[in-house]
Image (cartoon, rainbow, N blue to C red; front, side):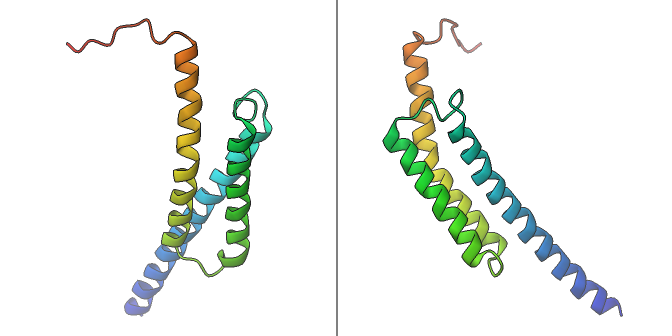
Length: 113
């Protein structure tokens, strides 16, 4: 009976990890989708080609979840999320870099003590 409990505990932990990874990936997709639709946040700051790139990646992510989500492992979800982040991060970094340059930079000095 103890062996069964240990086996089920391991299975439960794997399932919980998979669910958490799936939810993290889905939340990331929906958060980005929401930000793209908001003209005051990300949507209004992207040029059309960058916006299309992100939209295409979000669509691919949603399609992947529909097709493979039931059989995917936690690692699969994490890999998909990381791949999406790899596409989105340079685009969003460019926006923040442009915003910093247009504001004249930071007037505060960050000298180390």
